[in-house]
Image (cartoon, rainbow, N blue to C red):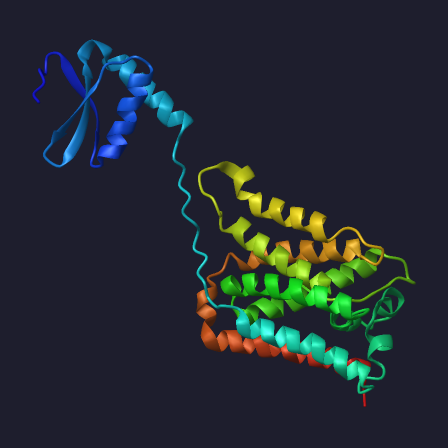
Length: 294
């Protein structure tokens, strides 16, 4: 097919026929005559010269209304599968449960509960040990499932070692903030505070690294909104639910996750992950020993 340059003007070019066909259909839908011609390896969209301005305006309006935003992710490399850290987490909280039941940790429940009055007296380790205590088996199972799910997700982007160190720190910080809010007689136990801290870490990470580019702060804040949605769904309700602890854990996770996401976590390497993982175990062991100074 040949076109008379005096009558037809090329207004768009694409290497893929599907793309140029899309523009042709746009013009057809608004009654603008057009033709597509292949020139070497490119496809060119032609319109009559007297319709050029109208055609360009219609295409511009279409592209503005249906702009293809850049959905590429900010660098959030997968550092780990998270399995090792989750296994250690499960062994730890279930091991504590069985050791306590066997009487090998006689003072752990009384000295490890996050009792506000005791924390105010300087027994801050209770903010750590309370994460290891549970009311009954159903409470333990529920926290195990939630902990594994969010723990694996966080570990994929932070690495297992750093993930669980941050989860432990944020969970403990959440318990401490909770102690500042509640009355002196208030007491709390359970790893759910750490679970919501893990959720917050993940939300903070993706918020900081701009999960979706080019759509403004409202879309970049979607991970935060998602975390709040999960909090509302699972963190509120139930007679024994410590809503404040869940919220403070989530808050600490978001703040810390946003800060840590500013750094390139690859530099830790495998050795760094092992070191941070060991630090998490040392902190936990020290807190447990503070409740049972044999």
